[in-house]
Length: 264
Image (cartoon, rainbow, N blue to C red; front, side, top):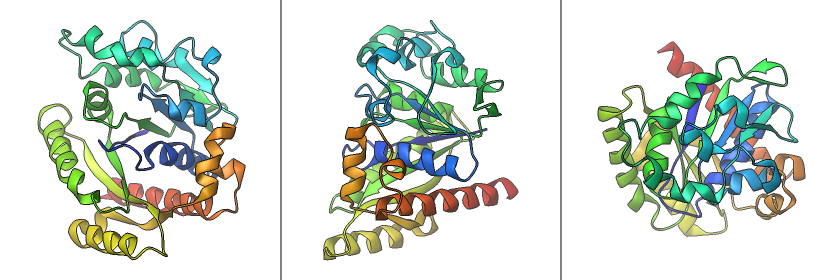
């Protein structure tokens, strides 16, 4: 089982869209994926069609140590994908655990309990953690629990500005809390081929970060934006749209990179 955290301290970069559509794409090629939503906004939970009434046990209960992660797993409408949902209670989790010695390792300890968990009768192969758009204790827990980080990066002018801070944070977490943590890759999102700025930003990030940037680029796509309002990943809402096809390619690329890393 591999644990991948999707992190970026900037909001509106396609992080949650990537979490739910990448999970669906990975499931489509045979993986069993658990999404762990630790963003108090709960957009990944809503985008997967999980109603608020279904969230009686959530990521908040797990982080407080009041429930096991297996008790919080909710099946989704997507075969091969399940979810640990978020609630607004997560807004208060920092105050609740701030004085605990293990405050940065609450999520890691909880996920250690997943070895016997099953999705559709099969062992979980990937955990995708969707973080809030800030470098707070929730994000630190997600990074401390992860094997690797995926960074969605919008093809906009300030893309590289926040990236250096995030890379520094990842390095600090690696040195102090999680020595196995590494950067799996950077996903360029909201690319508009008609916009020269998008192309320039893409070129700049590739020049700066090299092979860390995936070849697959996620386009700005209306169907990707519409799908969450129907409680569906775009791959279920419109499989043929450009956004869905891009996430299928990205899933294949990530699996290939994972195999290269495990062989190294």
